Image (tube, rainbow, N blue to C red):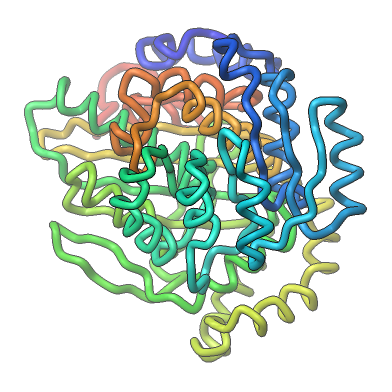
Length: 428
């Protein structure tokens, strides 16, 4: 893959060449230290789509890793182990069984918690087990309340001397690191103040991620959206505030709507951006209408009840899978940063398949932690103690493998679906 520095510095014509190169890339083996290659990685939820995708990505990026697929379904676990090969095994683990969980972490180097949804979770049992067994920890949490609860274990993680990252998947996760890089670069290039940062996400159907992302979406409809406006915390209606956003090559323009996502709060507090929000949209367009209808017609109490939402998911799942077959699995993230002097920069990350891309992204975080890029404590990805500034480039290189479009720190006009050429009236 081309050096990430090329993404920062190339113009629009060279960018097309780089994108073409990225399209041809699949997960390639990465060079890591001997100690990292021999690490034992326990993936909780490894029989699910996201956990399984993470396991596959890790086995390709670093084939010598010892991967433990941990979950409740032995049949699915055995099938995944068969796919991964000799350096893998299955462990039957129920997250609610603390003793069994700790027993499986005793000689592990890192535990990766992928068994969502995280919404309405009442505890952080996996993180607690990781701390007690002195095991490094990563989760792909996409819930503000869970992430806040995880951060409250900071002192215990420091005492145990273990590194831990919460919200470390694709979004949130890679999107946080993209935001951190936009802010870091703006502080060097811009003479103005940071004003506004916006996250935009798009997924075709469920992106191939199945019932988990469906349950997550439904549960988020039951939460008020927390955003920040000029430093003031505000609450907004979920799946409102529609914007039509250009996600660039391979995706185009899509409608996106406000959702309550943890990166809004963390980026506001960690990176010091006064105005922050996050929006999400899907295809086909009628799924967006359906989300609005559910938010309008169903009581918040219903949408906050995990058991009722799971029943709703089971009802909708066959229909969603059928539509996924025609909608595809594409995913795209766009992060926009605006400064007071007109210095506006964006980053875009697009992939043909969410389920595959989230696995590669999560695997990139796993390797970063194993390589020592994360300090002891519980961190968000955008914190320098979470992913060291000097390690961000490598993480983004690894996470962006297989993308159809990946750019960062470009002016918005340069990455539109039909980019303008420099000339008279371009900023009009």
